[in-house]
Length: 556
Image 1 (tube, rainbow, N blue to C red):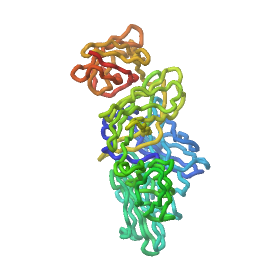
Image 2 (spheres, helix red, strand yellow):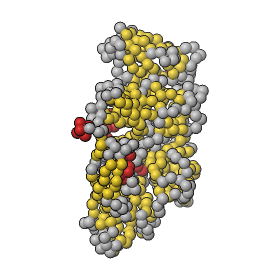
Image 3 (cartoon, rainbow, N blue to C red):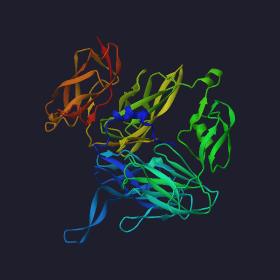
Image 4 (cartoon, rainbow, N blue to C red):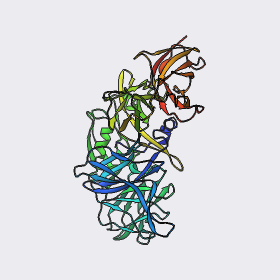
């Protein structure tokens, strides 16, 4: 699964240190949050401080979106006549899903004048689709489910929620599973409740799932009419509380045994759950890693997020001790890079089972003109800031994707792990974290750029306590606007100060003095530093642009 809900404890520091990517604008929901293969639907996007016009960007092939305009509602004017009034921060798109589109979770982003939004999940499924219906006056009418399995789409707008009526036979095991990847970024989590025809909760229901992935399993006690109620378990009801629920005799794995094996071993794995086609799976571990083993065990079925499989090295000692490991995350999940400029990326490494080595981050097969700089997390630390930059001459003219890889070493063995893009947003009650597989990038010549003019591949030599002159170049250093900005040290978090900025006459450049603090830095220390621009007098405020990552070495 390329997308999942993250544990907040893992990414709290990452969220706290990330740089906002969309200048206050935020894509919060898409409704409906998916569509069927071979269909055409109209979707509504909702957010905060959105500006248009927009282009919708959906990852993968076979799905295209066309901008239709702002959402309109009918209101009475001062003369009592009905008129159409646009709704702020609501836009409509026509989405066409081709017949050969691959089912799965896609990434839905908005691209507009100068930036690319953070993503939301959008599911493509080869199942019937059904939306909750609304009576005149806004009252919710029970929606009749004609066939299963089905994808249910709705918005929990009231405390009563939505209701879906269906007939079921005794002995049937029905599963209602929320699709967590498409939930909005407002803290909303759906509650799934099976009830009898009178609305009373049924007894023969088992509930599973983490905070954002509820699953309810209903073992039908007798033939009859039943109702699935979808309400808000967390968050306040409203138009933005979008859900997507799969309903039917869906296969669900609640546990399996064994949960680990030695590399190269062949074994039978016993499955426990509901609606499973078989109770055992033959697993051949040769040539696989832990995730591939899990995919083989759970193929075609939903597996609870808490389940995992561990593939160990051979040998008695290896069987007893978990292997050193790490995972790498990054924010933001979308990059907006100026031409001849840089975008700031925050990387966090989660160290597991005693892994304590250095971690380096690099781009996989970058396009011409795109560079990754400064991605180094030394032993004993778990975070760094780095930049992805363009050279101003050769770079993709449209949206494109990048992949970053983190590489470490343990006992002479190299460990390579993908850097997982993460989106985070503050909900009404708590932070929301989600992982994505793809990093989308947009290069825009209209956004602010900042460059430090240094010798290529040669570190800047810094003497403790002594100011070193640096030359900066940026379009904002013009006679009209240069005095509005001042440079600050973005990374490292402590140890550097920037002062004494003087602009060059009639040029888009300025000189500054960079000083390494002897109370924080040590002679021989090496690393990368990043400078940024803020509004003058607002040193702790929003970073408007960042330089590339520049290597440095500290001397006496």
